Length: 55
Image 1 (tube, rainbow, N blue to C red):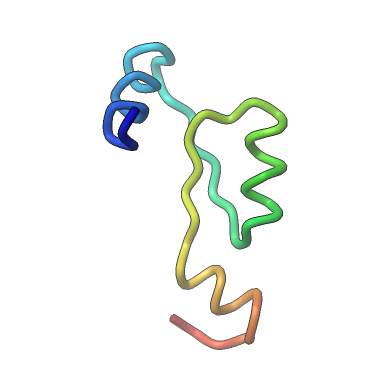
Image 2 (cartoon, rainbow, N blue to C red):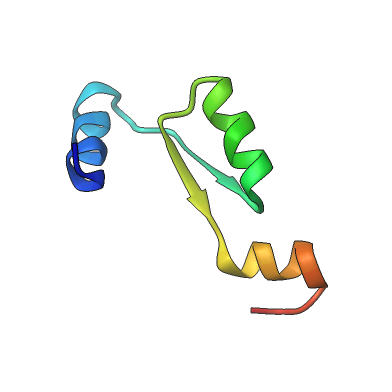
């Protein structure tokens, strides 16, 4: 199933769809383990968390 189809399915099954913001892959994995169906991974968050630099 494509990413778009998965997203549309999640939108139709859960209203409103809760999307959690994460700053690295580890946090994204933890969010999926506790049941989140959608994750926002910020490029700026990764840069800040990894290097202390703005995006």
